[in-house]
Length: 280
Ligand SMILES: [Zn+2]
Image (cartoon, rainbow, N blue to C red; front, side, top):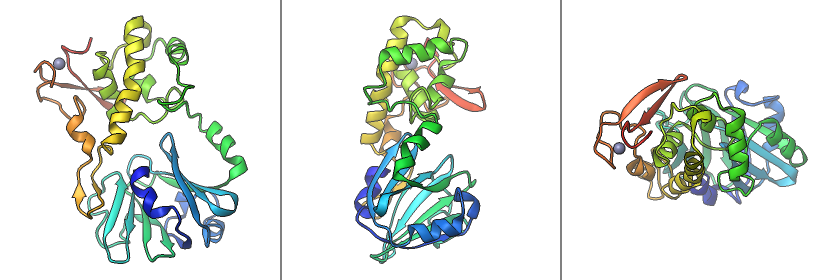
């Protein structure tokens, strides 16, 4: 999503911000509106699931879409680019009832932060406080980071030997950026059932899980994720990663590897999908 939106947002100047739902701004929305006005977007990046808009004059706008947020960029000709979660009706008649924070840009384009359940947030942070902000969020290393090493991963597993491997991989302090979909895919790739306890995993299984994490994430980023979005041609398209999913969302469908029916179980309020034959 960051890769998709970056070319259209970097270099733009924010001419106006509108906050329709003040609780989504962490801090005073009045101050937020005044502070982002006339700032340029110098860069757009990501840390874990947090979007980082680097602004001029030493500020970073952080944004989290949480479970149901989406960004919709509308060009002056009315065409759209979007990313994040799918909201039924979210891209119709903008702004709509899901549009809570709106940014206007110098070229006439408008960015809508839409959110169904309103758990998402934006926040303006001085650059010198960014390191502390990330530290406080207890975000672990990115899957492609050198800091994410077999040793660090194995000691995380050891510390939580009585937890399921699924819940450990969802824990953002262990490794950043894995959600429900990609944890299920990683565990299929590593041939391990999501309900297994960390303490019962063999050394070989732990290593396979470790190796599967960057593999699945890199494939997902290259395929531009799983959510529906408006693409470069302005058409609504399904995320390219959907056709690569082996287990997630495939309950009762045959396993792509062995043909056995994929099963779904409830685990800590989330659904886990797995092949009962390929995964032990
Ligand atoms: Zn199978």
